[in-house]
Length: 200
Image (cartoon, one colour):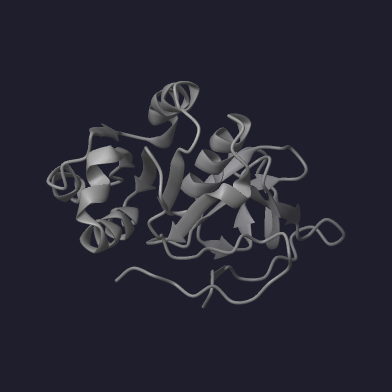
């Protein structure tokens, strides 16, 4: 299993559940990497679900794609990255009918960005199911230069855009689908603690 129990934190930090079947005429799954395991688990509980499902999947170096295809979804798309897949997601949402059920699974970065797209299409975040699987790396925004650094695994980390040493905060922006990073040595330049792995 690739589940991780996140420690309790501030209110803005997302909380993830376990995907559950909901009644609906159509079901949209968006997942990356080990997020496929959540879809496989759900399909095992409700095999008939896949006949009404559209799966958008980003493998990120894993080998779950064939297992997902073997479930027999109504539609299956495998993209190389989220950025390459977002046009497919937008097309599905533009053509969706009332009652579409949305399931997001995998990394926080994927779920946050996909949830943002789904909400922009008019579906409230409370109607979107999420399940974290796999990497605990974070998508971080530098509050100073506004650049986004993907897959942050250490605290502090160096902003990929402006080079500042940033403290990894739990404050999360749903609009940006990113956590916020703040300069850790602004008052004492160069006084930066050794980076430690997140959640260690």
